[in-house]
Image (cartoon, rainbow, N blue to C red; front, side, top):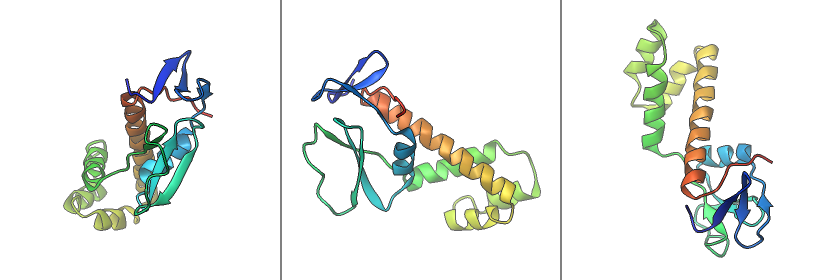
Length: 145
């Protein structure tokens, strides 16, 4: 369990305030998927702070946790896992040919709106799993606001 929070009756509890902290799971997902800013979870309020990547952390590290983001490796793994779930087709074959090139993969996907929608839904599900794992590793119950 992380040192920043305790589990209590299904709520994440800040060590500072000792009151249930409501988490914005959609906001955490957006933070995980966004790589243009550094995102921090305020363990007292449950707020998400967005800062420039080169900015100093917002304050006391026991209060502000850096939210993890996707990496080139996790992106490549998502593309592979997505294709593993697709039935054999011409589109799947074309995607397999460009699987190592994220831009080419997206360009091929853009030709089939149904497949593109399925891919982005899949990525959102992957982000949710990653955030759930991160919260659990920090000892924080994921309670939606």
